[in-house]
Length: 191
Image (cartoon, rainbow, N blue to C red; front, side):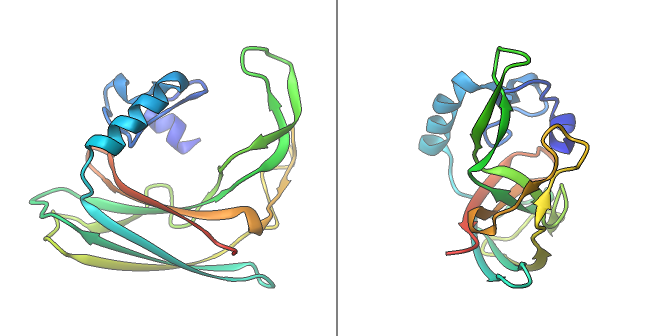
């Protein structure tokens, strides 16, 4: 909800590709534009940050350890750069309203890579606050307990069980002035 509210995404399926174009309205892309935008990004964008993730996971305690290593691949003379680390869960089977058919539900819909929680807060931790030197490396470590369920009992679906075997850590580095994502990475927590 925090991201939807901040970036002004008022309906779905809409989204952003690396948050390009923010704060103009061109940053919000309809579902039909995603393929072209992603393809363009893959062909034309340069990596400015190398991001690696390593994880540990204790199945009994459900404790997740995350180490994120960020290395700047160019000199930034100014700007603030943050790291966000998120928990997602793939293939959650739960009801979903049909797009364009209010009131109609698909009862066994497979929700893909749903955001479960922000491990280090919605806007993340600062990697560099006044630019960054070439090859500057910042290592951040986090400990997080994966809950047994996510959601609230008052929602239409109630809390949904979290199967840690379907969970991933997603991390990204972004420019905290423009909000553009510079690099991202995903890692499954349980192999």
